[in-house]
Image 1 (cartoon, rainbow, N blue to C red):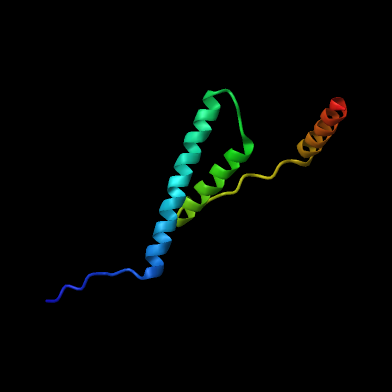
Image 2: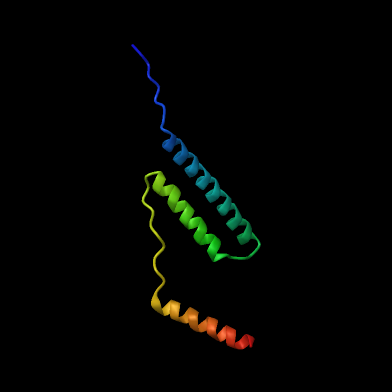
Length: 91
């Protein structure tokens, strides 16, 4: 009986390494979010970056990733009006 080891292709090795880097990035983003929250701040772009990297990791692990739900139109309009009012007050 001959034992033949499974030797992965170069492409599989590179993809595996890339996924491991994304996992590390996700972990670091999560740690940064916790530290920012502890300081009493919130950073939406950082939260979205964490969400997307977590989604990539989930897809490579065979889990379904759901993107965040869209923002309702009335909330988006209120945000635009609020920003315009804030800019007007600054002038």
